[in-house]
Image (cartoon, rainbow, N blue to C red; front, side, top):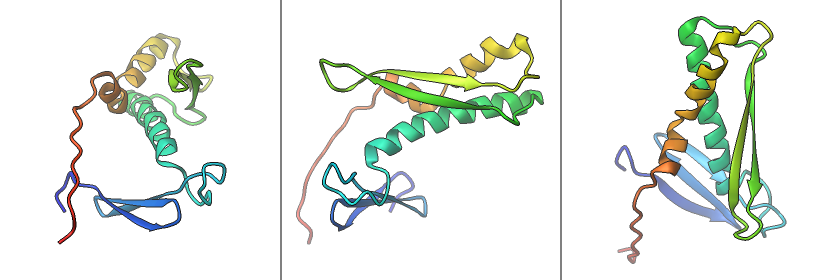
Length: 135
């Protein structure tokens, strides 16, 4: 398996496991969607990766400047487009500790906005999907 390859297996039911960089990420569908609800769905992980990425950029911004991070974090919510039923808006609210310097508020928002997951959504890759039989 190459460094950029993700191996996917089907352990049963609606579960799908993805192996990448020596980690195995287990997913399942919700009970409502026909799964057992034993893990987050792949789409849930997509959303979590977006929030965690923005969070990392906030953390790195603060750490690079020696700014306080205790009590800091962020909350992300999504709003669906009623016509497409897809997410139409992502809102990220950064929570800063009381002693966070006012002069850095706009800059920390800009830092979160540089998240690489978001950058890939804004400039999506081309997809190529093929199928072959096992030998």
